[in-house]
Every structure is written in C-alpha cells, then in structure tokens.
Image (cartoon, rainbow, N blue to C red; front, side, top):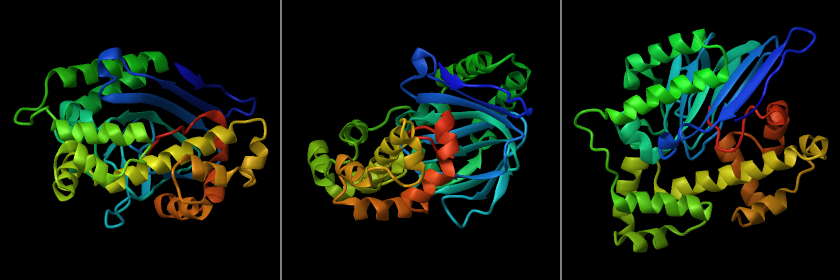
Length: 305
C-alpha cells in the first residue's frame, strides 16, 4: 500500500492512499485510491482519458461534475459514479472538501463485475447504483463507519469478490479472444502497434475488428491506441514532476520533445496537439493545474475523473 496522509497545523486534512485489490480481483481491477481533503483551496480537476473505467464511491460530499466527456450530458452530482472509457476530459469541482475511493476497472473485467461490456458505458458517466444496485449503498455505509483506509479497501475487496462470484444473469462473462488479444497487444505496445497488424493478428478485417472492439471496450482500436499513448506521455510528465527539479517542471521546463519521442509521437508539436485534444489544455497548463496533486500522489498514471 502506498499513500500520504496527514493534518497540517492549520487544521487542513490531505490524505491519499493507494492499494492493489485482493489477488483474485487483479484481473478485473488495477488499483484503489482513497482520498480525503478538508480545508484545502477550492479547485477544479480534469478527469483525463485513460485505459480504465472509473468507479468512484464518495464518503461525505457528493462528486460534483461540471462537465462530462460527452458534452450532451448535463452537469450533476453523484454519490457514486461509474464512467466508461472516453476520449475527452471531464471536469470535477470541489469547494475545499472531498472524500471517497476511486476504483480503476479493467475493460476486459467489466462483464464479470458490472454485468455488461465496457462498451455500453463508452463516453458517459452514470450513477453507479444503476449498474451495481444495493452494493453501492452497502459499501458507503460500511466504509463511513470503518476505522481507516485498510479497512475500507478490505470492505471493497469483499463486495467486489461477491459481485465477481455472482455474475449478472444473461450476460456472458466471456470476451471474444480476438478482442482480448488486441486489447492486450495495444497495452503492451504502449499504443504504438498498427491497427492493420492487430487485424492481421486476429484474422478479422479491419472493419470487423473495429466494430467488435468498440462494442466490447468502448473505443475503436485506433482511438484506444491514442488514449494509451496519451496516458503513457502523462505518466512520464508525472514522473518528471516528482524529480528534484520539479519546480522547473511546474514552470514548463520538462523535456516535452523527449516525452514525444518515447511515446511514439511524430514530434513535440504532435504531442502538444494530442494533449490539447484529450486533456482540453496544453501540457504546461495541465502540469500547473495539477502540480500540487502530483506532488502528493493524488492523481497517478491512468487516473480518470
């Protein structure tokens, strides 16, 4: 388990704690992140595209969504939120206090844990209880009464293991092997494998692969590769922000050209364009906005809203 927790002398609380789920869940869930903030400055946070579905359980205040990846979806408040893969940023606000647990769900595990393919949640956010039912209220009630983050994570393990053991009736848990192979190949390559090579590897036409992949994952192989490359670039920027020269990173002094080359972009300008498209702002602005969160580990590689 990794994390940072504490109360400052001025009474502010800023806690963040990350843990991997129980062993049997790791094929479905990448990690849990617990957070609690009190008395910090009000802020906006960009929920960036990533290769994971996002499940958030709040503990106190509701999650305030000012904008969703699909601009047609109106703003709203959520006690628990479930969001699919997306290729545009979300915008979340808090007034100086927020608390909850974020769960990074693997798309290939959606059928088992959620009872539906990840593609049915593409580009949208929904109240989590619309999919998970009473499990959301059960978790919140038990988590609020729990002594700390280890106990809350253990409760989440218990509930998710139960869901995995009792898949929804009428929803096959099996993902087409070709889709699973193509998704894993994209992840392993950092989003740099050609879609034509993926199609050849599955024995399907490019059009058939795109259709089946999008229905299962929520993005086409080309769009998924784009998100995976972007996430890798964001990861490298975060790592640079955590170095002793972090103050230079916050000022825009990171090696964007090196990051572009490492992540398969044509050049620095290509990376900058992609960052604007997927994050809604240039890299320098995102680093400045999120610099404090990056320092304390609040938002790490692959994080969604």
